[in-house]
Length: 305
Image 1 (cartoon, helix red, strand yellow):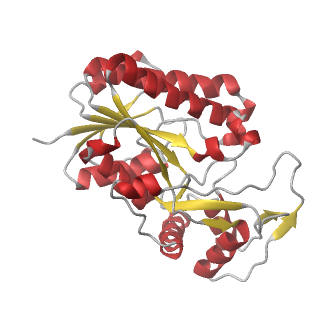
Image 2 (spheres, one colour; image 1 turned 30 degrees about the vertical axis):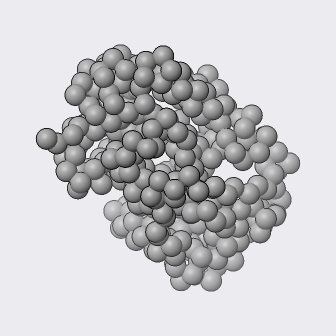
């Protein structure tokens, strides 16, 4: 019997890639998204799609018969979250609670949900409203497990990149931002201390390998896992790698870093994820090449202005 899986945030970057993978694996996929941030064209053919907000009670009936829920819907632009804490908490905390409630009422077996490495990126980031919401989400999951027996898996994604990454945001992710600038022949901006500002990047297909593991293996239940490569790249290394795959010799513009935007290092401790059978397989160069081809396609379609 084909198992039914629900993906909240199915029109987003990770959600759409996951839905495509699930369909290939033979799962029935229900997708929900209010399209505030997601892109309709991202939704793979074959998804039973419903345009609905995770804060609405209208989602409850869509969870009937669902085995596992992947909750990836969120307001996730950190600067936008900081400017509007009320909306941030409404979407990321109220919305998450509503997803757990819908799953509880429908008898869903497990919720796999997106947490964030922002929780681990220093005191300043932890005090931001996005991270506050994600810390709260992890507590909500534990609460539903204790009160109602609903299993969860919390995934602290580090810097996930790859095709369909949301380059349209006011502050696009760094890999997309660099590639787009170089394809236009423009100079990207780097900030002082860029050689000390380091991030752990992980390719979206590798993240989806862990998602599939969550579906099939209950040893991950009621635990938190960090998903990254287990290696940090400085912004200089990232820029040099992007420039190499694009084939560009454009030099960046170096600007002063804002006092509140201190250089940081993120590094995922992936030992727990490796211990349950997961290993990130995609090299940074391979992942960048795939993202480059996707963005070239977006240019060809006229989607990048």
